[in-house]
Length: 490
Image (cartoon, rainbow, N blue to C red):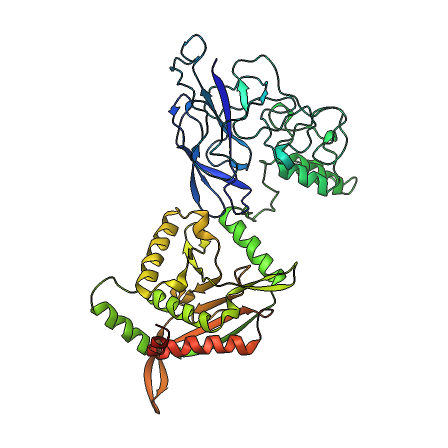
């Protein structure tokens, strides 16, 4: 008989824990091939097309476009293998031959292996778009989020299901909920299933000492939403006998907190949320300091003009600045390092993977030019152009957004002269470049109008002292003022 395989949102790597469905690429009833992209999701780092590791007929999808799912949550189910009688599937679509041997795609959490033989009996999935699998205590099957894939708050009665878990099509059995005597999401004993799906709801209840068994959910089939928990917390905090206190308990959409009149609350998620988390961590952990210097960039601008006039690919200004950075890091390797706080060691890195800040419609991203130390200005320019275009179109991969060892931040494009940027954790330093504008400057003993730029270096004071940071910045400024200095390192 046909088997229905459940495909879950895989771990996309780099510590990402959730993704938002941007666009479904298949409909219920569509026939899909192994490794065919089935959904486009947006993580905190990039837009990613997720391929399905199974070939068959899509029987259900989980989540509408715009829905945010945690890693491990069901994405869709696929009917694989022909029924024993050779008959078509229930919707009339001919059932494909079995194709569950495994995917050639390698994402963390699935791919390259055959589906495990473990089975669990559940109700057959609905066939409508956005269909969900009912489960005792709630309308959705909860995503496994605990160790080993088991859902927090469930006992041994619920088996952990890795990608490729077999579901018997049309089986009359039912999925088990929270077993009596286990604990719920708030960490308390239960006498029955607690209808909670969201890990955020469980965490909010746990952190505030709220027993989820005491709540009546306002969601479908009694599902407990975040709004229910927040309403209960407000009621508990409201002074007794205050008129109108209960009137404030208006149900809100899940994931949205109450806002005072005239106040707009913007969810801190996606790219914005990832940036906020990383900057906050940098400020907490890195004792940073900043030094800066003005430099006469007239000769650098002339050198660039001469290079481009000679023919061949155009050399961008940021490519020249990147080449100067790699030369400076070769002289001052202390700044191409990271700090291992647990081992209390400074880890110096041989390769320079140069990140550069890029502002996009999705927010600030930092693509990384890998092995920048081994590239010339022309190669650097080509890679900057490629990554910038990918950033604008939202097609950067997680690998292209991680692994940087030093960051170049050209905030001059915003029309500002200087800045004290926050170090891109876990890196040790960032070079900032302001706008290049005509200014009065003493040149060869006379006052002249020159192209002047302000350069700033923000660095982790744990990896070096001011002398090293000042030496690095002075070398960069010397190369900007006299590009021929670079000839010594070519």
